[in-house]
Picture 1: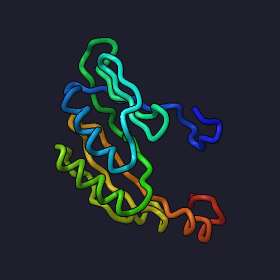
Picture 2: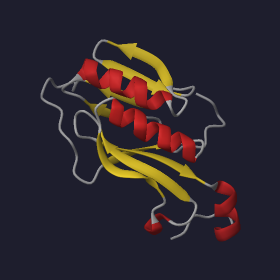
Picture 3: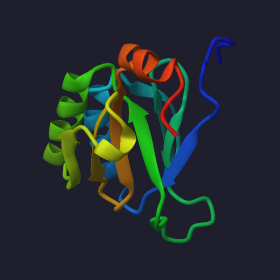
Picture 4: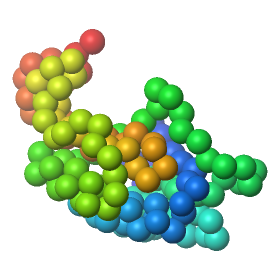
Length: 144
């Protein structure tokens, strides 16, 4: 892992009851954000741009995976077109729409994103943040 990584997270992991189908879903959807498979083990696959940041797995305890209410995973997009492409690819791969691409007033002017539910019902977001606009509006700090 790079010492220059600005993220505060090592990785996130979601459980799946439809592992092979869900892996194909994430291959298709995450490719639009410049992500690829980084690692794979029996019952687990990791995607990222350089490091294994997002994992899909069958639950280690052998019980069915379930969805956390109020939980979602957000992926960075390089631009608005990538958010749009992610949304289209996710829907084409079987996701359900939870919020079409666009601004969200409650997130502030620099935000543009979308939300989908994956094949297991997990809420997934692709988000573009206009950093230059954020710096102009908030002196580099996001709105509170």
